[in-house]
Length: 165
Image 1 (tube, helix red, strand yellow):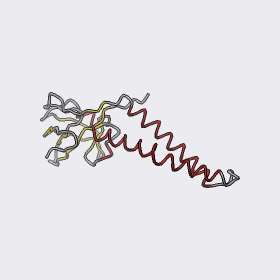
Image 2: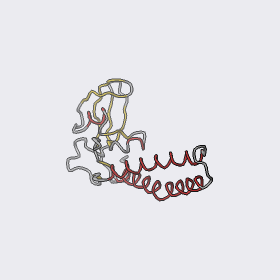
Image 3: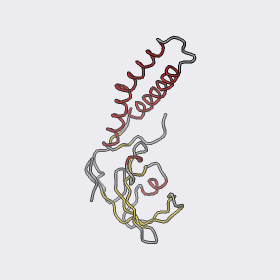
Image 4: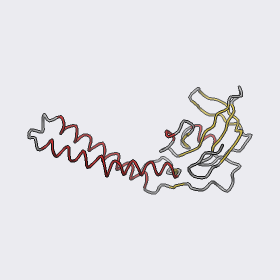
């Protein structure tokens, strides 16, 4: 069982489903055909195309199993929470460090934080520190530059597929 939270935005779910579809309907059939053609050439022990193809099939199958497992039971968060004064999944949060530098992050699931520079995982140190907080709260979080104190300046929620201004 994967311990990571299974929350995802509609965009994140669509990306995972598109990847699964691409692997299952396009890449796997093409690699299977290439392996069959390579196998028909005879000696498989020194056939690089056959060996590579079999390895690629295992990689595809492993990723397909992972994606199906992640998508099963996944909760797609389509609506903002009723209490928009606190940081919850999907929030855009603006924080300020003691020097006055601002940064803006969106709290997303662990399967999609790498899709946009401002996305952070709700399971990461900064995401966990922000969840449940309000405007004006100060948090201490581990960020790439080290442990830092940050003050929450703004919390925004947007409709699915859009980013607030």
